[in-house]
Length: 209
Ligand SMILES: Nc1ncnc2c1ncn2[C@@H]1O[C@H](COP(=O)(O)OP(=O)(O)OP(=O)(O)O)[C@@H](O)[C@H]1O
Ligand SMILES: O=P(O)(O)OC[C@H]1O[C@H](OP(=O)(O)OP(=O)(O)O)[C@H](O)[C@@H]1O
Image 1 (tube, rainbow, N blue to C red):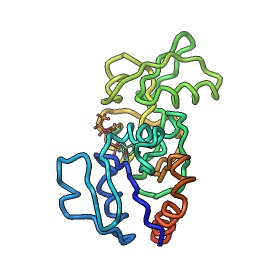
Image 2 (image 1 turned 90 degrees about the vertical axis):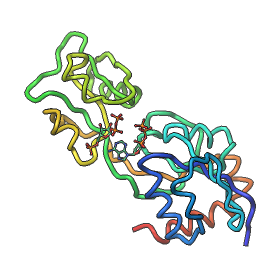
Image 3 (image 1 turned 180 degrees about the vertical axis):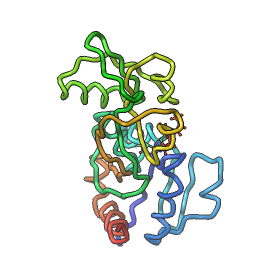
């Protein structure tokens, strides 16, 4: 068995739990403290693995720079940032989608319509494809606030249960893309540690429905 040492960038937050469960189901022996430690680097010696815990948006940064060999990142992050990483596998966890939303019954105005989003590149790409010229306003969270307070006529954001839109009286105008988490790899790591990375991909692929 090829057992070269590997560093995996794991997203903290809502993807973490599902990702850890997936790894355990695939037979990786992750210690119990993995789930509720405040440590940012966790070594699993018997697996020859090191995990680093990063913000979901930063996982691809660590992988692109090669300080992590592989990582787990949402497709939304991959769409937003054109990074030099290989997408190896759809893990089919943390499913949600990117959508355009706004107040019901409102048309997007002809002159300088504003769109608020945590995903400015996805948003501008989408409206460009629609042939609509919009001004993108980058926000970092609570995106649904923007149309309510008059900052923007539309938002581009993640929808999962739809509860946030509903509770704020917003409606969906268009679906942009389905989102799940992906296993990504640094291209150089992939070349040098191909056998080990392929083994991990195969173990995960075997248990993904
Ligand atoms: N309802 C959801 N809202 C946001 N992201 C979701 C949702 N469901 C799944 N995801 C996935 O989870 C990732 C975001 O995870 P999380 O919310 O923990 O990070 P974050 O956006 O950095 O959070 P925060 O900035 O609030 O700490 C997204 O990239 C997406 O792929
Ligand atoms: O369809 P739902 O199940 O309601 O989920 C979607 C909401 O969840 C996310 O926000 P998050 O909780 O990450 O907070 P944020 O606004 O601070 O990013 C996302 O930005 C939506 O607001």
